[in-house]
Length: 565
Image 1 (tube, rainbow, N blue to C red):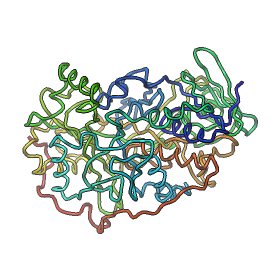
Image 2 (image 1 turned 180 degrees about the horizontal axis):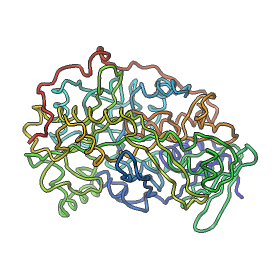
Image 3 (image 1 turned 90 degrees about the vertical axis):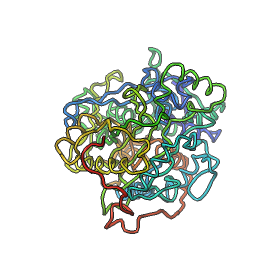
Image 4 (image 1 turned 45 degrees about the vertical axis):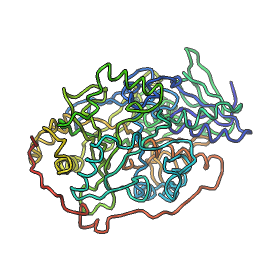
């Protein structure tokens, strides 16, 4: 058995951060275990090829959810990275921190010390923003963030203008002073290549003699001695091995992997463990509960002007894009194509946004294929604050038993009403004059949005996951029986064990998850090392009439509920 000071399980968005920060002290030895292989692939590195690693078994755990009652029994894909860099190596590279209010809500949920002021220094520490450092942005961190090709396609700015014409404001930096409104979108790209946490954090640290990285190491379970976590058991290339931790084991296997490993180790709800044939070592009812995710739909329109990415999907065009990217790391290969966006409030009385837009100058599916012949554009949109809660539960004692994932989407009437509102507001935005020169027929949803039954049916049939599973090992106060970890990320009732990844979020943020996951790991690394946590106050914009108005102005054009042609 090999001995280390720290063992980190999972080399994903959080694990790579921890491996780097904990190994900064040469006196501490760190073992990083990753079930996948390295990410040395052209398709991982090329931003425009993002659909390929997401759909490649080498890089993806291949999880699927259980039949969803709220989606008429549909099963949802739950792609998770199985590779160095984890999901940061297969995601869409969108960089959204969330709204400041999200983290203040964490505090209200029992996560003391995780307010926006507590989190801001760690967002900044992680980041190398293209505009340089300021009160909100970091300028010297490991993760490069920018705007891709800086919205050269006029559709990007037309979408922003449409949002303004619909009565919403503009934001120059949604990760800064103001999230609400329409503006440019940010991505984790460095000099034209994907900037995963492997590239940003792990690669620079791998030369350190006190850091050991073991790939193809699938964790079987944690090793406990009473209430002390002493190590980990893992399988690699058919052989079982063990490693012991003198200080701590840190679980960073993500919102599916972390609760599954805890449960296989006998840590979790007693009935779940009994059903899976696992003896109870430490009853903790919240493990695998509180699962949250974002859903989204595509609004798709034909484009009257041949300027969309659909004109570059043929093999010859792809070859040209690929050659330019290989030689120069520029052009359409150097962007994820999500270069403009919006954040709005769905109703008056909400203090912060709860609907997010990703604009794409293409009509395309997640598998990278065109949605229809000809040119088109689309908007990805969905409510970001669902009430519904799901579960992650192991099906058996072996790591080879795929976990049972039930998101329980659209389980509440409020969630369903949020979708009705979301679709109406979106059609209104996309029918504003700024898009008149580009917008052709509405391909989808193409339904009468005044008919709630028709809307509900279309949503059930067409929603897709945004791939943001989170909150399944939530952080909370000592009197919260469903909290899995305390505000220092320590597993309740056990010694020498922490969870540090998106599973510990108490509530899902208003945005994509990569940025807050990296932040959580940065802050946790200080807590683990016994360093005084940092804190920075910064003002945050809020609509002056948010209690009485859903938006700042009135739309230029009122839009009928029926589909536009």
